[in-house]
Each structure stands twice: as structure tokens, then as C-alpha cells.
Image 1: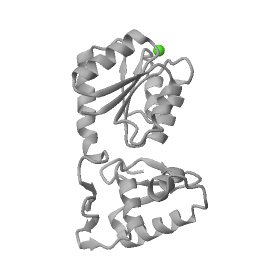
Image 2: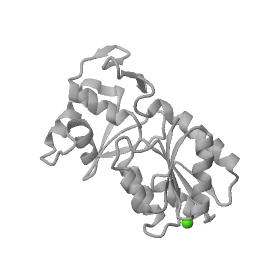
Image 3: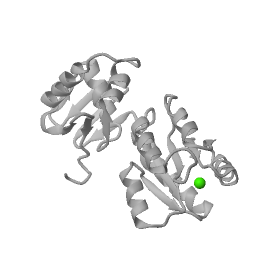
Length: 230
Ligand code: CA
């Protein structure tokens, strides 16, 4: 069972989507606008999947995608759009969407896509798989052990937590604020130099096993070894 948030201003469509997803066994919730969807992201954990209608009354759909992606980096984002222009699709993907469906779509197609995305996302979402793999590195969350081909890598507790936070979705940027609040303290607003010190330690200890890219004035990204090379 996944937690799915349907963001759609048309109550008829929203209600039908929520009902369909419930039949599939998912815990689905309807949000009629962008503001209520962003309120959902205040919850921890927020949701496994967001279905986002691009045409909303209060927030531009692309902007909403960007903000959802920032606030719920581990969630799957599927865009629903009546706009069939290729530029819209490209823009949606650039704003963090994982997939899109053009209206009108068949519910069977929606079901198939949602199921496929959740299956693929499952090893990455918190609480499902105890092991995360990044390249040849295996991170065992329950045992709090990180193993490289040459053997176990000794990590301090915060270093381990930071590595896990970056590794749940390799290839995705994580802001300094999110890293500080998720790894250190929920209400952190002090200096974040300690974050850079821990990233430096991870780079030193893990060597060539992982590549952590610094995103100036934003945060960090653990590169996906299976993804496209920059
Ligand atoms: Ca709409």
C-alpha cells in the first residue's frame, strides 16, 4: 500500500482518481489545489507518489512540481496534463516530474504506470529495503554498515545518516536545509559548516566508490553510477 496524493482542481476527476487508487489498495488523498498539496509535504513522511494536474487555480503546475520535488525528494511525481505540447512535457520533466499522462487518459493506463513507478521506487523509499546499493557500495540500514568491495567502511553515525539520505535517490539534488534538518535536527537554523565537514569525510573514506557533487548555493548530489554521465 502506497500513500498517493492526487492534486486536481476538478472534483469529478479528482474523486474518480482517488477512488480508483483506493480500489488498487492505496491510501489516496485528494488535494484540490497547490496550497493543500504543499501542506501535505509538512508531514513526515509526506507521500510515495504525487499525481499533479498542471492546470491548478492557485499555483503554476511547473512551479508546484519544483516545490514538491524539493520538499519530497523521494516521492514519485507524475504529471497529468491536457497540454500535449512537447515543450510542456520537457518542462515538466525538468521541474522534477518522473512521468506524465496526457488527458484524457484511460484509468487502466494510469493504474499500470502508478504500479510500475511504485515497484521501481520501492528499493529507494524509506523503510522498504534494508539495503541500498550505489555502484559497488552496499549500505545496510538495519545493521548500519557500509561495505565496499575491499571491505567494511567505518563511518561515524552522522556520516552514515548523511550517506543514506543522499543514497536513497541517487542522482537527485538535496538542499543543505533538507540535509541539515533530516540528518541533524528538525529545527536546525545554525551554521551548516558541519555538513561540509561530514561530506568531506565521506569523500575521503569512500574514495572512488561514490561521487558526491557540490551544488553551489544549493546542496549536494550523490551521483548515480547507473545514470547518464555529466
Ligand atoms: Ca485542472
